[in-house]
Image 1 (tube, one colour):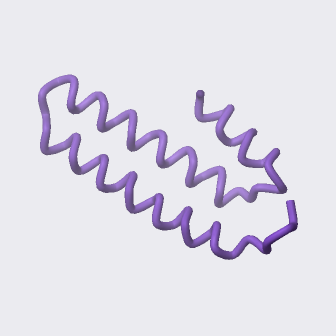
Image 2: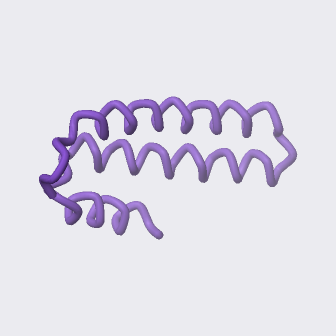
Length: 72
């Protein structure tokens, strides 16, 4: 799934905000950078990009905890 597709699907699932789209784009960007680094043998950079992506997931969890139950 491309970054644009992710941003669109985020918006389409209940009024996603620019912040949510930006987080999805940033997570995908970090995962792509991690993959590229690991493929070139740069394990340290790959792990760093994975750690950054994981920190963005903490932000997603925080956003998800603010979604009212039953409102989609």
